[in-house]
Length: 168
Length: 95
Image 1 (cartoon, chains in turn brown, blue):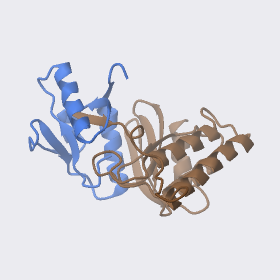
Image 2 (cartoon, rainbow over the protein chains, first blue to last red):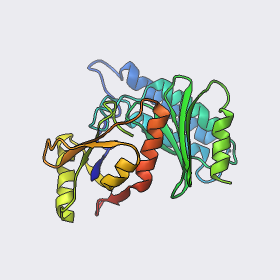
Image 3 (tube, rainbow over the protein chains, first blue to last red):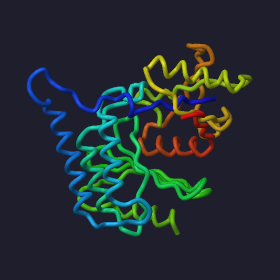
């Protein structure tokens, strides 16, 4: 069997321009968000293992922007809400510097996924939906785990423990 | 990850030549005005071993859905990871 992997970014319009002057409110917010990411990149000296924090924040913004419209994957995918973007940004900044920056992906249920893959059969993934809840799942050889944790100000310890397990 | 409908759309490629497989993918992409970047090949047995089911409706020909996903979001995520680990990613040549 094959699953077609669609393009999610190239054909997605980033901004909508109203008939009046300037950008609509949604597009204006996206401009602000993008400028904030650039400002953080210029001011930040934080470097984490692998990709830099700045690269991760930019990647996160690009994923959010590319998937901020309904049916962005052609299979009925839900819009990634702004709350998910904000929550994901918060989590990236809270990651310990010893933890590798994850690959950032959009999920069809409207959540943002962070994926850490050490090797085949060694992977840990979390999903952030902007509702103060982190869903996670992982495979560590023959061992598997999955669950859900409340998130407010600090990354739940079980998430950190699984990340350390992945890279131990 | 499956879409909100929990029916993950796939095509059965057994017996097809490579160019025929890519043709199916291109046709799928065209219907949704998307560019095909690649495909993920997985054996039907791997889907069954992951505790999921395959619903072959042949609409269009060779189409099927992977169904039987669990209720819990994190459990769905684990199944998706298991499938991804057993799938082989094939990128379209020429970008």
